[in-house]
Length: 337
Picture 1 (cartoon, one colour):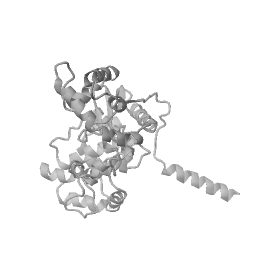
Picture 2 (picture 1 turned 180 degrees about the vertical axis):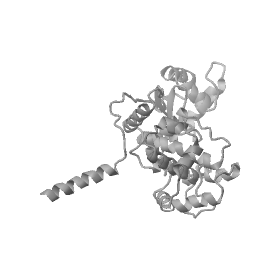
Picture 3 (picture 1 turned 90 degrees about the vertical axis):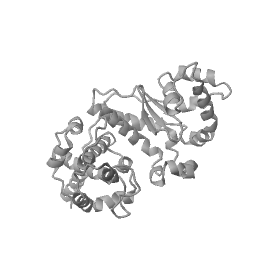
Picture 4 (picture 1 turned 135 degrees about the vertical axis):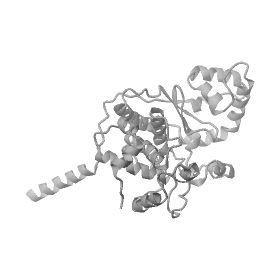
């Protein structure tokens, strides 16, 4: 019996040791209700655009003008801006098949409200003074419109970029010109919450990587991934990195080699053409095996930040995001095998 109890105790301790140190945010007061601009917009009668837009603006005064002016690119809503009405009618009629394809997939968004609520609770836990977007709206926009947009009053989710990797448009020639397969394969609904947290992270801390050296940009970008991970601590890393399982496994297995590659190629480089090889989306990393993913500089930056965070548990997300990247680099003493 004693041996059994000891064995069970070891199992419990092992299980606890494998868990992330995730704070309890269940008491953080947050409400999320996604307002369906997409449904309301496509109810407009294409033969009565003006009264339809007036009614839509009355229903969504915090988003309709942003949608028409910025997402459709038709200029602000006004009695004199005829372009806005023409562009709205054209979009309404031409994107009706897109709406018909997406509607069954997104008929109910309660699952997303649940995910966003949990993430918003983490945001408020770590940043209690941060004003979360007053409204969350879903919309269907042109395919070159963002999948997540932060406006003055809303967190807006563009469902046209979450139709699933097999959505016919993504696979068409025009779709591939906009979004090659290595990008469009991420256009799945499960990426929405992570992308929303990326937008909020950059709203909290605007990107100022600018013309900094490669190592600084790697760590600055890595800090964003680290922060998003604090907001979605129970989600798969692939939702943050956008990597496939094989790419993730390759990075983990070759971390030491990847870092040696950077050391041999000057991590202090300031040439934009060199930096963009390692920072930003790409099917693979130039100069590395085909199994390598793009944006590998950000991945290494993330590992450096994680090592620093593990050795400095007292550092809050607020402090981490404000820390000089060179200090993180020097103090982390990152030397993967």
